[in-house]
Length: 97
Image (cartoon, rainbow, N blue to C red):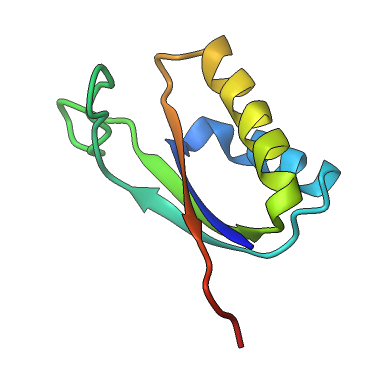
């Protein structure tokens, strides 16, 4: 089992949920408004007058065999509109209750 944290421009929310539904990735935690900026090239998403856009974030637990395909689908979205911003990070899950 892996944890996948996805930080993305709010415009991607419905698209990401649709991908999760089509790939039977059900459980997640969602933060509607998160702020940040890319580590290399991304513009800040602060929700301010100067930087008005905001990100959202999703944390989901995914079976190992689904991770690579899910990440590839997310990467395809990001490549289509790179200026919007989408990043995903994966962690190992040691235990669940």
